[in-house]
Every structure is written in structure tokens, then in C-alpha cells.
Image 1 (tube, helix red, strand yellow):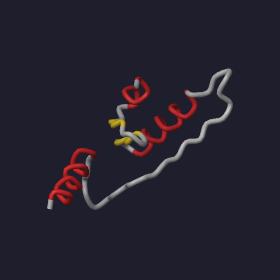
Image 2 (cartoon, rainbow, N blue to C red):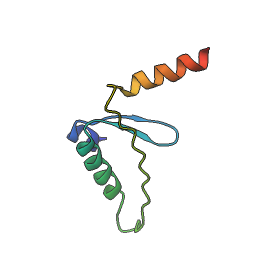
Image 3 (cartoon, rainbow, N blue to C red):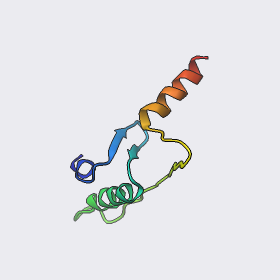
Image 4 (cartoon, one colour):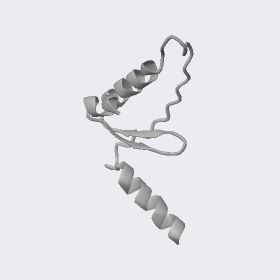
Length: 75
């Protein structure tokens, strides 16, 4: 996962995707590099899906979002 470290973007692998956290410009750069890194002689088509959750009113992090959901599920 050198691409993530190179841009200073935090990441978390999940069973259905990868969560990226950081400055939007850096996140886009990591997404682009990750997408392009898969191509080789045998791979000529790659599909990448991106969902953006961007808030300006709160400073939320991956771990905080997970704790919130886990707390709600425990109620």
C-alpha cells in the first residue's frame, strides 16, 4: 500500500472496498494512481467506483464514524 503512504492518505481495507481519508486533492491522486496501477499486459479494463462523504461542519474521522455506528447498533 505504498501509494497511500506516498500521499499521506489514511486508509482502511474493508470486505467490500477501501476507505480513504485525507485532503480531497490527495485522495483523488491516490484513487487515480490505484486505478492506473492495475493495468498490465493482461488487464486492459478497470472499473473504479468512488463515493465521497465530505463534511464542512464537523471534523470526522474513519474511527469516529465507526464508533458512532457501533454505538447506535448497540442500543
